[in-house]
Image (cartoon, rainbow, N blue to C red):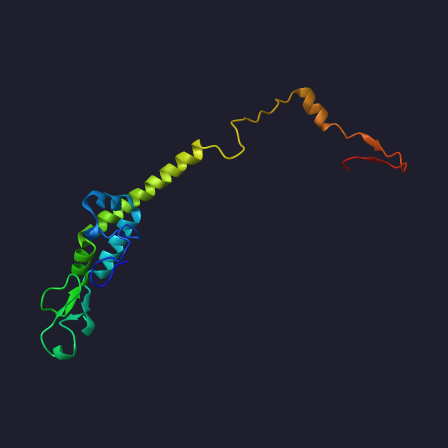
Amino acid sequence: MFCSSGHQADGQYSGFVLYQPGMHPWLSWIRWLNPIYYSIEAVLSNELEGILFQCVPRQLAPFGPGYAGGPAGCAITGAEPGTTFVTGTAYLESALGFSTSHIWRNFGIVVAWWIAYVVLGCIAIENVPAAGSGKGVTLFKISTELDAEESHAKPPVVEQAASGITSKAGT
């Protein structure tokens, strides 16, 4: 998604999170249409808040055979000059533009997106007809006294011509 230097590789407009600091200002509004953006900002901000990342020798500047033991600084986005560590909060703010103060705001936005999807789904289910269905209505005949008497009558005797056996249907 992003390199250790804080710059995204080739796809600036792809992935779960659109890399905001590298976006053109006239296209940066796209990230607000993605509910996953809010989820990932909330989760990463919550998980990386208060974490301290130590830089390994290859992430220190200057680095090389002649620089061992000398003063060095961490070359990761968000690190303060002259330090050999970076905090998770500083990294998120400088690399992705995320803020820990947005955690509950983003949670509320994700819940609002969910409610909107449920409401739109309910509206679609009620208004979009299923394939092959129509607006037909099943009507039932109102029974009369005569119909009720006929339904309680015994079934007729059926004769079978081939075997000569007579039987009563339904017994």
